[in-house]
Length: 461
Image (cartoon, rainbow, N blue to C red; front, side, top):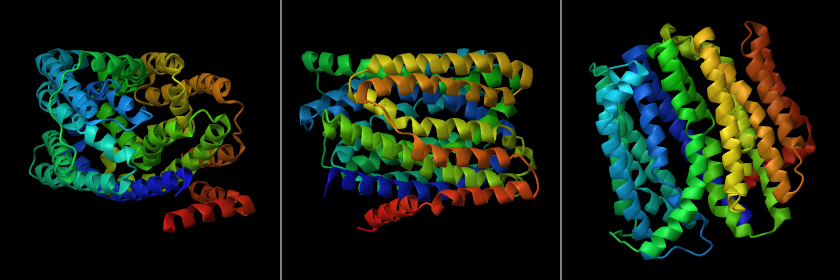
C-alpha cells in the first residue's frame, strides 16, 4: 500500500472515529451545559483553560522527537521519554497545586482554585500516554488509537452526566475529565506490548531536549491562545462570558476535528517524503483541500441550524454563543488551511520561523482582545480572532520560501463558500437557509466530483 493511500486510509479511520466522538460529545455537552448552567460551566472553562495550557507545555516536544525520527525509536528511547515526562509532570502538578489560589485571584474567580488543583492531576494521566500513542502512530495503527480514544470518551460522559444531574455543578466535567484520562492511560498500557521503565542517559536526554525544546518553544507560544479566554475575557467580562466563549470553542473544535487528524498524520507521513519538494508541495495542496472540505462543510452546516440547536437543545441561556460563533468558526477554518504549512516547516527544521509566526499571531490576537473585550464584551474576543488572521500571510511566505509556490485555487473555492455561509448564518429568515445551496456550487465541476469519488474509493478499500 502506497504512503498516500495508507495515510489517507488512516486519516479516514480517524475521521470516522472523530465523527462518532462528536455525536457522543454533542449529547454529553448538551446534558452537562444545560443542567449546570453558564456560570458553573464558565468556572470549569476558566480552570480547564489554565490547566490545558500547562498540559500542552508538559510534552516539551518529546513526542515530536519520537515521531520525527527517521528510524524507528528503540526501547531505551521510549523509556527515556517516559522518565522525562514523569519529571516534567511532577513540576507542573506541584506548581499548579501550590499556585491555585494565585491563579484564582488573577482571574478574579475564587471558585476556580479547588478545580485547578484537581484538574492538575489530569496532566500526568494525559501526557504519560504519549510513548504508547507515538508507537501506534508510527505503525499507522489508527484503528486501535480510534478504539481507545472512543472508549475513553465514553467513560467521561458516564461519569460527568450523572454527576451533573445530581447537582455537582462544575465538578461534574472536572471528575469526568479525570476519569477519561485515567481510562485512556489504562487502555494504552494493557493493549500495547510496549512496557516502559525508568531510564537516565544524559547524552540521550541532551539530544532529545535540544530537538524537543526547539520545537516545543514555538508550540508553547501558540498555546498562549488558550489563556486569552480565561484571563482576558474572564477578568473583563465575567464567568458567563467565559462560558459562552468556551462552549463556542468546544463546538467549533468538535466540528473541526479533521484539523487534528491531519496534523497527527502529517507528523508521521511527511518525514517519509524525504527532501522531495515536489511531493511535499503536492501533499500540502491536497491537504489544504481536504482540510477545507472536512472542516468548512460541517461548520457551515451547523451554523445554519445553530439558533434552533442552541435554543431548543442547550436552552435560551446559551443563545449569546451565536454572537461569537461565526468569528471563531472562520478563525478555525483559516487555521485548518495552514495546518500543513507549519508541519512542513517543522519537517525542514525551521522551528524558529514557526516561532516568529506564533509570536506575531499571539501578539495580534491577545493585544486585540485586551483592547476590544473591555469595550465590546465577549464579542471583542471574536473580532480579535479576525484581526489575527493577518498573521497567516507570514506563514505562507515562510512555506513558499522552503518548498516553492503553492496553488490555493481549489481550497480557496471551498473556503470562500464556507465563509459566505457562516456570514449568511447571522441573517434571519430565508437568506440563512437558502445560503446552504452555495455548498453545492463546487459539485458542478467534474474535477471536484471525481476527486470526491476517489476519496470514497480509498475509504472503502
